[in-house]
Structure formats: structure tokens, C-alpha cells
Amino acid sequence: MIGGNGSEPMKNICPNCGAHDNETDARFCMACGCKLGSSLVFPPAPPKPRVIPDTVSGRFVINALLWTAPTYNAYSVGLIDGRLGSHTVLEQPLTLGDPFERVLQIAGKSEVAGANGRSTASGYRSLKPHLPDPASLHAMSTLSERLGLLKPIDYGVESECAYIVFDQIQGLPIAHLDQMGEKEARSVGIQLCEIAEKFHSLGWVHNGFEPYNVVLDHNNKVRLLGFDRARAKGSRTDGMPIYPSRGYTAPELFDEDALYDPRADVYSIAALLQFLLTGERLDSGDGATIYPVATVVPGFERLLARALADDPAARFQTVAELKRALSDLTLPIVLQSGHFTDVGLVRELNEDSILSLNLTQYYESVQTQIGLYIVSDGMGGEAAGEVASRVTVRAIAEWVTEKLISASLRSTRREKIAAPTQTGGLRLAIADGNEMATTELLRMAIMHANREVLAYASANPSERGLGATVTVAMLVGDVLTVAHVGDSRCYLLAGDQLEQLTEDHSLVQRMVNTGNLSRSEARIHPYRNVIYRSIGGDEQIEIDVVRKRLTNGDVILVCSDGLNSMLSDDQIRDILMVNTDPNTAAKELVVNANAAGGEDNTSVVVVRFN
Image (cartoon, rainbow, N blue to C red; front, side, top):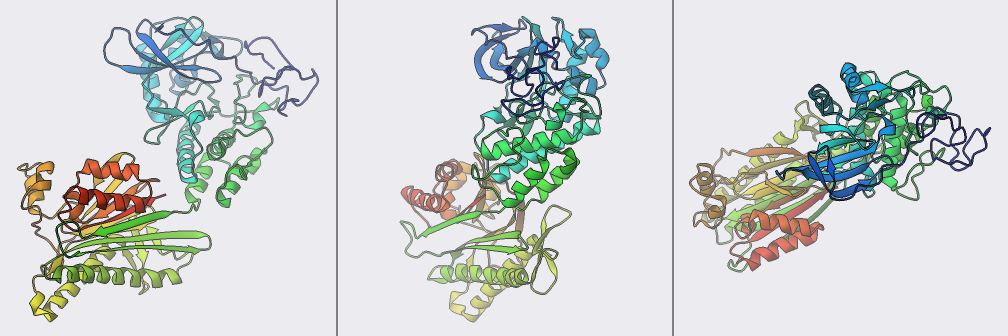
């Protein structure tokens, strides 16, 4: 085995854990159980952290040490000339070689790397201090976009250390994250598989998927900090050794005659997922050991057990297979919903009607989760508005549930109640044995409600002129479909961003669209309640439909205009972010609307998608 300096043989040092006290003829490490005698290299410790303030490359000044990893230090730096700019520098020992040699080779720019350094006996490239080579940086920047690497803006050598400069990293290495839920971990795993697929298609194995080499940004997007351990598929480890990551490097790479094989990346990705789910590193020979440290669905545990098999032949044979297994994994969808309605401080009658319905179906371990959420604001006075909203909600609920519930009782794995369409929407099995898109189902349900309200008005001449707004949000799996008429709204809170999905069918909204009124002015305009579309207004009704795909943690809000006429979007967002329980959030929204004046009935339905 090659020692930490890349030259002297040190037979008794374990490349996995660095233990020095193994007997010379020992085959396995006494500390970690790893095979000894491999050609893998035990990495040196990271450089001693720099004194702050210090400079890098004559262009950057160090502001703070962000974190220390097993082989590098990460600093926050700014431009030394005082211009605005925030960057992150990674610094690692030069004994590990040129961190971008593999990048340039994969990019087909090995001649560029050759201009900057020379090959060493250990297979690494030793850098000489230099100004950044424009061709090298261009090659690295181009490849970083293709392979998921954070884009480097500078690199070089100082004081026997190689450094890489990135734009400020907006996120954290996986090593610093808390345990994740199954959906978040699966998303990370799928992204890593996609990155690994690109490497493998170019003839390389990554070999470096481990917690300090993978960053998750604020948008939950996976980015790599480097791939200095990338090696050509099928090449021998003794010809160009790598340093392993304890718990994440596939066990077969420690064999004396090991070859770099894409199945090693399958193991590493699965080991990272195990870490994300449990918060613990996988020790040598443990396999997938999740329970009782964490409780995940059995299917996920079985998937990891296969991907972490010691024998590569027993694993998924490609990262594409692993990605497909992750994508097909049935994980429970949990819909938490809360609702609240109040007459307010001015009106004598509450003319709003709401409905919140969750339908969960399991057949052959396949889950279908459907949520139906309706808010209708009645118009007409003298109790007619209350009747219009009640008839609207009842008619829509009857139409949708009659179609779905009977269909769900007949469906099987091969005849699912919901299936994706080519356009990214959903088609639903309905009671008559046919299929219908969610968008069409909601349109027909609202048209049915419109006919019911018109029929009621015809049968009750004294209540002619009654009508209602309606907003229907239907969630099937992770696809949200919203249909609406009038000015009741649907919002989506994703992270800290609140988006209004519906557009009011009102006079003031038209004025906003033409630039004659601001959104804040529209909220207090005397004609803000004048709408030009409603249920019961005409036999021919125009219905707007919006579709969104949700991610874990998203919050849906359906509300009557009594909420948004009293509270700004920023106030609504803040209340939803502070109150994570949907029932509490719904009550807080209504109470705050009353505190702001309570000029109208206020009704809300809040749904959290997990």
C-alpha cells in the first residue's frame, strides 16, 4: 500500500480508518475490519486553518472559516480590492494532487493540465504556482455545468496547498445536515444517480460521493465540490489509486486487484442515503442497518440493503437501475389539512361554505392520496348567498366523489385510480369505467354546480340574482389542480415564497392588469367586490384551471376574499410560515383578518403536503 505522502509503502496502515497498529501480515484491520494490502491511499489531514484575515491568490481576502472536512478547509472570502463579491474557497494539501486533473481529462483537455504540471509516480499531478489558465477554467466551467460541479472561478497553488475558488456556496455539505425524511432523501438520491449517469456515459467512475463532497443548496439541488477521485472505468486501482472515504467507498475497491467499476458509485450513493436517513455513517460490513435508529418504509430499507451489498453482483448493476427503483418507491403521502370560517365583525350572516375531504386508498401496497378542498363565497343577500355557496359546494362534492370513490373501490395495481398523462397532468379512472383528466373533471363538476344554482334560482323566483364564487383545489399524489370562478383564491407557499395561483375575475384585477391600479390599492378599492364571473350568473360559464406539481413541505391555502381584503400577501405568508400546523394556521389567518377589521366573512382551508 502507498502511504499518506504518496510514496513510501506502509503495509500496516488501514486506508479506511488510518489505524497504524495492524500486524504486517494482517489481512483485515483490527479497528474497522477493512481489507488491508490494497493500493488505496490514506489521505493526509487538511491544512492548518489560515489566520484571519489572510489572502488567497492575491485577489481574495479570507473572512471566516466555514467548515473543516477530512481533506480540505472551506473559507468565506471577499475580493481584496473591496469590490462587492462573496466567494467560497476550498483548500486541500498539495499531496492529494491537482484537484482538477480529472476534470480536465474528462473534458478532453488533458493537454491543458499538462501545461500546468507534471505527472508523478503515484499517478497524481503536481501543480506549480500559476495564474489561472483561461483554457483550463473554460474547460472546467463547461464541464461543471454538465456534471453538477459548483462552477469554479479560480484555482491554483499557495504554500503547498491547492485551492479552488467558487462563487459563494448557498447551502451546506451533506455532512452538516440533520436527518432527512424519506422523500427528501429520495430526491437527493435521484439527483446523485443522474450525476453519476453522466460520469459513466463519459467512461468515468466518480468514486467520491461522500458527505463532505456533496452540497445541498437552499433549493434542495445537489451540487458537487469536486471529483478528484474520478477514474476511467475498468482501470486498476494500483495504477492510479484514490483515497477512500470511510463508510462510503465500496468494499471491493480495497481488494488488491481491484478495478474501478460503476457499481462502486451505486454503493456510495446508497451509503449517503443511509447517512441522510439515520445520521450515522455505515461501518465496514454492516450493510443497511436503519432500524431502530430511524424508521423508514420497508421498501426503502430493502432497496438500500440491495444497493449496499458487499458483492457488486448482488447490487443494482447500474445507477440507472437504482434511480428507477428510487423513483418507483412507494412512499406514503401525508396530507394535513385545517379549516376555519367566521362571519366577521360587520356582516350578520356567514354566506361562505367550505369543504375539506381527504381520500386515501391502498391496493397491493400502492397508495393513492386524493384531497378535495372547496371554498365558495355566496352573493345575493337575504340568505340567498348562503344557499348559492352551499349548493355550489354540495354539487361539486357530489360530482367528484361519485366519480372517484366508486372507481377507487374497483381499481387495482394495474388499473390505478390515477395515472400520469403525456403532458404531465393526471387522468383519473371514473365510475363509468372511462378515464378523465383532473382538469376536465373539475370543469365538469363546476359546470354541474352552475346548473344546480341556476335550477334553484328558477325554482325560487324570489331569490333570483343569487350567485357564488368557487375555488376548487384537488390534489392527486403530488399534482395539484385548481379550478375557479370569481375572486376566491388559491395560494401556494413553497419554502418562503407565497404564490397566488388564481387570478381574480374582478374589476379591480383588470385595473391591476392594465397598470391602472397597484395590488395594494386594489385591496382597499371601493369596487374590489365587483366580479364579472360567478356561479349562477349565466348558463355559459368560463372556468380557469391551473396545475402545479408539489414538493415536500409545500402549503396550499384556499380562501374567500374576506382574507385577502384584510391581509396583505406578506402577512398571509408570515402567518403560514410561523404556524406549521394547518388547523392553527387556519384559525390564525381568520383571527388576524378580524383584527384588521373583519369587514367580510372569512373562510380558509390550509393543506400541508408531506
